[in-house]
Every structure is written in C-alpha cells, then in structure tokens.
Image (cartoon, rainbow, N blue to C red; front, top):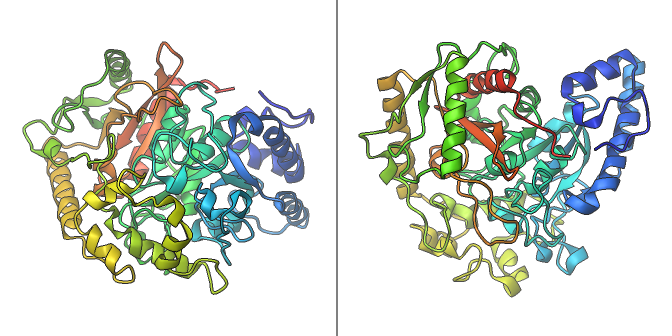
Length: 512
C-alpha cells in the first residue's frame, strides 16, 4: 500500500538504498519529495500500526538541505536522502528518550529524559545524510522480545499478520520498515530485540558482534549484551546500514576491538547469488538446544534445507551433537523463555547512561531514577525486571550502582560459549550455522505467550552475530525466517550467505 501522488516516485514498497541513490542522482525525484511521500505514508498508516511515536519535525529541512548540497555539487553521505527511523531508547537531541515508559514521558505524566546530544549511532546516521523521520515504539525499558503492548503509546501492530505479536523490543522500527514508512530503521538487541521483530514481520535484521557498533547513549539493559543493528526489507540495505553504524568511538571503548574486523569495501561488497556454493552450514538440532521445532516449522525448515543444498551449500546435521553446549542455557526464573545472565550490570549501566544525558537532565543518578519510577517498581518481585533478583551478582551491583560489577559467572559462561563454538566450527570446518529463527509460529498479539526463538541467550551471551532472512510463510500467513549465525566478526560472511539465499528464493512478500 502506498499513499504517494507524485508519478515520478517509485512505489514506496520497492524503495531501496540503491533506488533512492539512483533516483536522486538522475533527478527523477528530490529528497524533499521522497520525504514528503514517506511523511504521507506515516500519516496514513501510523494510526493503525503505531510504529512511530515521535515525528522528527526537522525531517523536511534535512531533505531540503540535501537537495541544496546536491545542486551545489557538494559531497554527500552514503545514505543521503534515505528515509530512516530510530528506536526510541537511542538518544536523539531534541526528542525525549522515553524507553516506552509513561514515567519517563511528560506527555503521559512522567519526566522527560532530554539528551543534550545524539547517541553515536544517531550521529552516524546524520553524518551519512539519512533523513530521520522519527522515533519508534518499544515496550517498557525494552524488556520483552515479543511485543510493545505495555508502552505508554500503546501496542504496535504487526503489518505481516495483524493478530500476532510483532516481535520486540524493536517492534516499532520493524513495523515502520514493513509498512514502507521508511527504507530502514535502527534496532537494538539484548535478547532477541533485532532478530525477533525482523522475523515476525518478514524483514532482514542484522544483530552484530558485540563491539562492532557502539551502544553509548542508548537506554541500557546490559552493556555486556546490548548491540545496535539495522532492520531493512532486503539484505543489501541492511548491509549498507551496518556500514554506517560500525566502527570505533572512544565513547564505547569495546568498539576498539573492531577496527581490523570491518571488511575493505564495506559489508555490502562482494555480494553474489553464488555465495552459498561450497559453504559448510551447521543445522539446528538437540546438540544446540533441546527444544524441538513444531511440525509445521520442521516442514518449512526441511524445505529450506533443500533450497540451501540446491544453492550449493554443504549441510552438516547438528554439529553440536555430543557436546554439552545445550546444557549452558538456563531459563531465568520469572521469565518465560529467557536467559538473563549479563543483565546484572544494569544499575551501573544506567548510571553511566544518565551521566551522558548532561547536567540539565531531569534524572542524573540511579537513585534519582529509582525515586522517579517508584510507583511502578520494575525490579520488584513479579514485575517486568523482577527476574534480575535471581541473577548472580545483581544484589551486590544494586547496592553500589556507581561501581562496575565484576560479573564472574557471566564472563565464565561467555568464555565457555565462545571456546565451544570455536571448537565445533573447527572440527566440522563450518562457515556458519543456519537455523529456523523461531521454534514455531508467532503467538497471538495479546495472548501473553512469548516468541519461542532458537538462538536468544546463546547468541547474546556469546556476543556472536546473526542475520535473519525471509524463508516463507506458515499456512496462517505468519512469516517463517532463517537466521544465519557464526563466529565473532563474521558479519560479512553471514551477509553473503543471507544474500545468496534471499536472491535464490525470493520468499518475501510485501506486508501491506
């Protein structure tokens, strides 16, 4: 569905970074015309899908400035004129950061967290000359990977299948991309929050290696697990988005580890429909996790295995069989399907986040944060983050929020994951793993059931990358997706695999 009236503009659902670049370069349309068309799309559809919660009033000014600079022959960034959205917890100067919580938004009776400057990822999008249309809906404090039902802004609806969960916590970003309000969006994952909404809505999501993309200036759940990545309608666009996001900043020292890991030419370089030929891919099985696929998911996965073989891949059954890998995962008491280890650092992480807001921030310390939100104590037993009390080291961490916690159990677990993954990859000469992203189809929007994924926890604690790609549909119409995952810093290889599968199958259908 498209709302634009300009006959020179392509259908918004067909827009890609490449078509935007070509259209602007040829004069087929201007950045202002494209931005107006996207704003019209937002006005037409956002009332139904509730993807964007704050519109960026400066979007048209940004587009006009891009047009002026183009006409003057000035250099432009790699995403010049490309309409994007930003997940609400990412600081963007001039717009409050609410993290989906009414107590952190004056319009819903709370206080505003107004950042004095952009988060690095937003700053990088601005520097790339993307046109930021607005900020997108999330559940309170990004706590769930299934929905945004408890947001002060209300639920986000899944455009791909409206009575099912949209995936979380980047629900709004995915819905904005799926409804053609924008070309790509910024998402963030601590425990499924990129891969789940991308897969739920028939999109491509890249969850990078931790340390590739900075997460300073983003409301934290865990500095040890949080990572920002793109959601787009195709693999190439997602890769081009990652090109802009990736790289070192002194604001996030762990990104120093990536400086020699980013490929020459960028993540969208060298993409080929033949990239799966000869690739050795490990398949999902009880060696990875004991959870079985539903009968329909198993049938769809069997079909994708045939497709992968036809595209030249060599497939290895359950390469983790015979190891104790599956025993590493522990569902944290108080959560439906989530291993929360690593989140113990949230008091310290929130302290550092609040410090970055600036001296005029309404909340400056963890103690002030707790006081401002005491009417909905998210850490209380039975509350959304009450499970943190079950985790090692959290009780001590909350006693001294300004002290960096040691997290010995988390670091030992991460080491064990990484060493065993390295061993299995070497033993089977694997290039990557390819799994169904979910065990079964999506739960109902208001069912209270969680999305049952195959990699959350293992992927996030180990800090390894993954990329989701559409792979068909259930009989109900719910999307079915694969996730390619691999060793640390293997994003370029995974993107190549995902691109070859995407182009070799072309499963994705527009959601609207």
